[in-house]
Image (cartoon, rainbow, N blue to C red; front, top):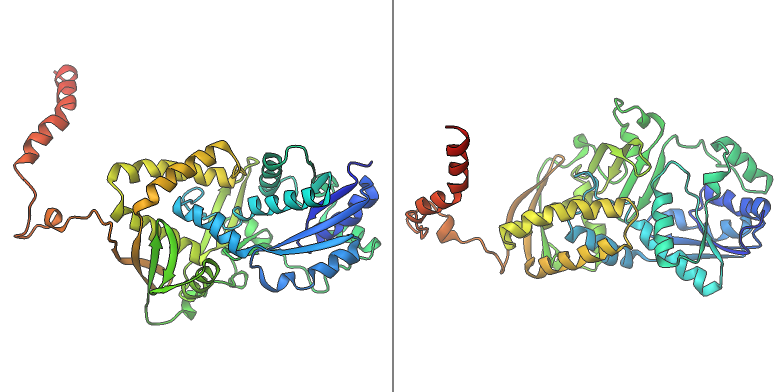
Length: 400
């Protein structure tokens, strides 16, 4: 059944997206397929990807390096929002999806395609993120999701691909499902599906086991300007290099692992393992700098905004009116968030040990308990009387 004539397919080079090419052609009558791979810092995986797509039947295979855009326009806004889904996951994988969706739409419009496609299954979060983002950016584009409909097992998918010359994996397939980009890695499936099973050390690549970490602590100084990370140990770095260097330094001390039971968008729980060394430390440092530069009621109110912001990203609503409105609020709060945070890395811990800012509203002469104390202690009694008045009135009425 033909659903589209020309399709832009989000392509990773894996089994599912490779099989999508002949499947779209043979089963759904698609005439022309253009594949698009986004270079998000996943490394060597992108090497042979262009040729593989062409061998599988694509008429054109595009690879776009968007690492800088990924960090500047997606990771950094999430850091300014201190975005942690369920207060733990820094959205390293989720943040890539709205960018890939934007690339798909741009290429579809450039080449006159009438549809875009992805290889997401019906149980995951990514199908939601892609579909919602694409629809928000171009509601007229058709969205095709073959893997959500073909009903084939992994073995059947490989066999289907082999009928059309798509080679099966040459080595024994890993039992784990892994997604990687510049911000981190997500690992699931295999033995990890048992929540009581300790993850094997072999799954980690970005973070060292504690026994292999240095026996001496390392100190880092991270500089921020208006909430944006800009420097490491006094050296200004471009966004990509800052993430690369932080990942290496932080991961070297065993910092950046997350093992959590996560509530997926589709309503099921899944056990997820993440490595996100730089992102976790940057969010922690940024939040700490806010405590020095923002007034209390702003930081308290912003905490609720941050949780909503993280949920919007996780649930595929990056391109939504609420997200846009929250961005405006967050941008206003960041005007004074400029300064430096000092972090001590040692044996799996990243401990904040100092912070400084020209915009600090920490007043030593008010905070001190020494002889320089300028706080008016006598004023406290009147403040407490007024502050506690509603409680006293209520108590007299209800406890008498």
